[in-house]
Amino acid sequence: MESDGVKPNLYDRKCGSRQVLDRIGDRWSVLVVLTLADGPRRYGELAERIDGVSQKMLTQTLRGLERDGLATRTVHAAVPPRVDYELTDLGRSLLTLLAGLEAWATDHLPEVEAARDRYDTRA
Image (tube, rainbow, N blue to C red; front, side, top):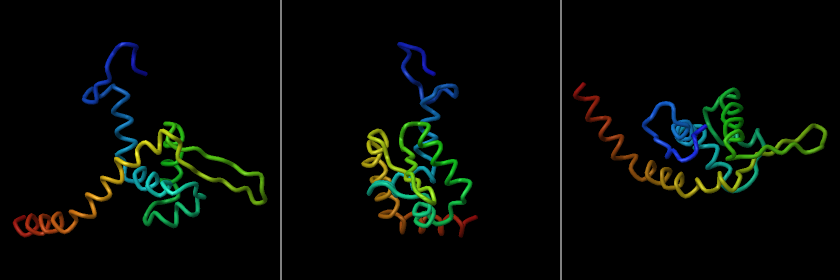
């Protein structure tokens, strides 16, 4: 935990701000947050939408997002039990940033792929 009056320093390996960056910069966290942008989703819906994520990684990611206050987990009294995940206000505050990253990645994909091809040809 940061001490009072000390400004967080992202470049200090002991600073909690680096853990926050690790959380919001993790590919699975980005995809989960973007998937939850339209509202609550069940675990199965998240797993179906996010191609390639393992059950273990999805569970770890959801727990991390919940621990960091970015998402909530709601268990509904039903048979079988129903669990929904939803962004908190803090989690929703990431949406503009992550939507920008999503747009950049899709808009610049052809350029990145061309650069990779040029690099691989030289290597």
